Image (cartoon, rainbow, N blue to C red):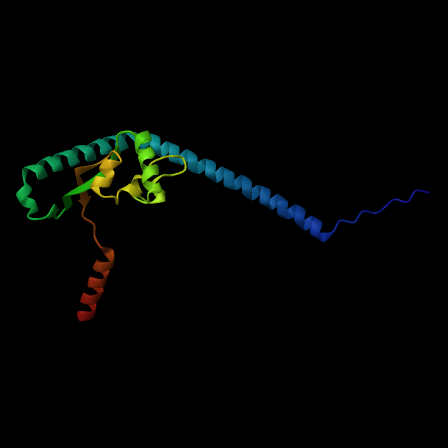
Length: 179
């Protein structure tokens, strides 16, 4: 006589199956949402790409025109380099970058200078790439000895005016309390 073993299914096993089914559905729904979002973004970009391009060109052209007027009217800036209007701020500012004529030669000179303690070890990275950020702090003679020239350039920027909501709300609250 063959005895049939009765299989018992535990409550935990049934719960695990249900949780896995729910998990699979949720993952699939998330994938659908992601696909929808990607599709919406692609459609929006397609619809707006012409406007985006037009506005980008407009902003660039306006900045060029604003800079030209600003250069023609240096007296508007007084002693500073900033001119404020009700619509925002235009300003001139100076920045510099390190220009390295011959990377290999400069890297070799840097290695020698690091060995002599003239520049920090961080001036050269292991990939033998010059770390300009570290070299920014070196004096002109040291830079020249290493074959580096600090180029200084004048820059221009335009910044639209913004309402400071925190200040506006605080002022409104103060006015309300005073009345």
